[in-house]
Length: 240
Image (tube, rainbow, N blue to C red; front, side, top):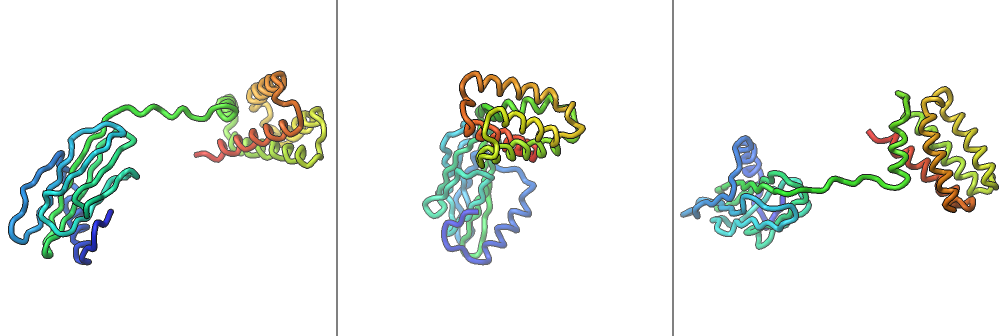
């Protein structure tokens, strides 16, 4: 909730009491309330009923009869209160109904109103991972093992271990990289090796393709790719 100016302590609990008592009531779309008279607080909120994704929306409470405001916004980072609470702006990144609460205080009286803006529009789906990560995610769908996440973590450690050995000059030729990887992966998978055969075949094709394209021309390139494979396996295996 955004404070717009110094607010009496009694106002805080009155506001939350009001929210509690009215939380089941519907919000008002493009609500307009007449200004109060005497010493009774009256909040008036104006806003468009609908807007588009990314559009700047103005919430206008300037006609309210209060001397202090307090705003409560839905979950959005694109919200700002200006002019001591008389107006607010927001912009939504996703479609949906956004309800804003505005409380106003005047001489120990409180008024509380809400306004709902429906955001319309289409948000393109997340394209998701690309490159090697996308391929590994696809290949993992071929693994027929109920404990694939445990095995993926072990396989991750295998690839990252080989990468470290390459970087530390323990493995010094591409041929030995292949041999060491085969032995380490076999030990990592144990009896689950057959379930991972389709994954291994797709990975073998990819490595051959990268080698033919000159992308695995030296040991540092092997170390980098092996580390990427290991990191991606660990990442996917740790996801819920």
